[in-house]
Every structure is written in structure tokens, then in C-alpha cells.
Length: 253
Image (cartoon, rainbow, N blue to C red):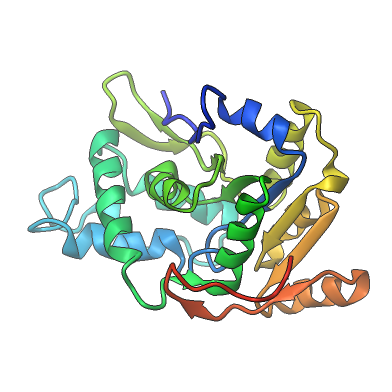
């Protein structure tokens, strides 16, 4: 059992129906593209220190296996899996509640968002385009953001729960690197939309496969490898300046 993908409805339409009618989809990485922080790391601090007396740790607040360091030198997908193993034995409902509380506190920060990324998302949504968040983070953290910004769908790392609703610590697959491109391609295969008519936004080399999977990619920030691709292909580059949720940037996608 996994948490379902977020679906924002327009009248009676499901998210796939809404996306099919949109004509264009804008795919957004989240961390340091829409949110200024790395959501999983920021949430971990909240989970262990701030949200309840003793934190949300399953052993009553005493650092145990859940607090072990992530493996040094591991690739991003392995580190993604290791992060979620920290939550083995936690009821999914508990994680979801903490995610809602974390995001409500996080979004009040004056430097919580990448202003150009949020402004681009707002423009796509206001133009009637579909908006899809694609991230290695998890539904518990991304669903509140998706509702806040009006995203239609979340494609993310899906945690596995047992029949008792408790997280096993494992995931189906990390939504990292090539997995993002595969998820984008799989969604578009279900819809009467061409990849060439879709947009993509990312800030890190690991987003490159996703950016190449759409016809109109844009780089957020100053990752050297992405900037080299932007120069080579004429992709737009948006600044990574942080600001509040209400900020709007002038740069066009």
C-alpha cells in the first residue's frame, strides 16, 4: 500500500483528465527549483527536534537506527533509499501529519521558495497548463506543497507500507535521475500530448534526463553541467534567488 498521487480536480475531472485537456505540461523538480531548501533534510531536522517532545522518532526520541548517517560515497539513488529506511516502523498517518505540520511552518520562512521557479509555476498554471512535481522526496512532504501551488500531480519516491499502515522503510524506486525521465515519459504515453510541447525545470545534473525528456527545458540556478547544456542548446536559465511564497519573478519560461 502506498500513498496515492496528488490529484487536483477541475470540476469533476481527475488529474489525468485535466492534464489531457491542458495542451501543455510543465514538469518541475522541487528541491532548489521550487523550494529553496532540500525538503528531505529540512524535514529530518523538524522530525527529530521540533515537532513533538522528543521528536517523532519511533523509539521515544532516543537516536537509534533511524538516526544513522547516510552512507558516504553512495550514489543519489542509494542515499535516497537509505533516507527512507530511517522511517521503518513509523505509521504512515504519523508521517503525513508531520509533513503537513512541517510544510505549514516551512512556507512562512521569508526565504522558503525559489522565486523564479515559483513564478514560472504560477505562470504555467495561470495559462491553463498542467503542472506536475517530480521529486525524490515523498508524498508526505510534497502533497501539502502541491495543494499550495495548485499542482495537478506529484511523481515522487513512493514509500511502501504494510497492511497495518506502517512504513516498511523500503520504497518502490527512488525518483532520481533517469527515473524522473521514465516517469515523465510514462505519464505522457497515457496522454494525447507531445513531449515537444511540454516544459521542464530543474537545478541539478540529476535533473538532466528529465529536462531532455521534454521539448522546452529550463535551468534554475548555476549547476555547471546544466549551464553548459543551456549554453549549447539555448535553454533559458532562471536565477535561484530565494524569497517568500508571494514573490513573483519577471523571467519568462
